[in-house]
Length: 116
Length: 108
Image (tube, rainbow over all chains, first blue to last red; front, top):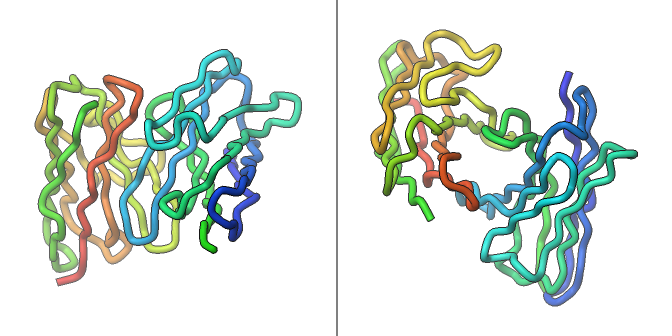
């Protein structure tokens, strides 16, 4: 069965960096676009970034463009989100989701808290 | 960017009753509309895609309808496990993929 397991969240100071990982299993990882979606505490869902099945194309939400980088390692069936210059408003649970559309499987999420 | 608007914000329903949730797009999304269910402390789960196709393992009491800019999710007879927050999402014009703000279905 499809499984997506995120890791790498934690508490980080504003301006610092963090890298999230999403380990995929149960499907052919290299055949699907993958997304990151976040949810601030008590708020709704916000799409963050997507990467194409072969890693050749990436898109970002305006709120993270220039600060976040999505990538994937097909040899490890793992998706990444490198988050730089973090801000308090980036505090959220970050989910990875299998795409491209719709988002048919989601991980359990990893919490990122940006606070001094 | 396509803005998705859901109504009502909160829906109070008794078990066994029918629940009707609405979603409106700021411009046509054809039938490229999905519905997700999220329970407290859990990840979202895909319910409906293509505006009306149930995802695998989703019970028949969930149905979706609509096209263009107006969509509806209907739960024919609400069960206790159906309470939570429901989000619509368009995947017609991207990026970005956009979600509605959610409708919370609570016990009356």
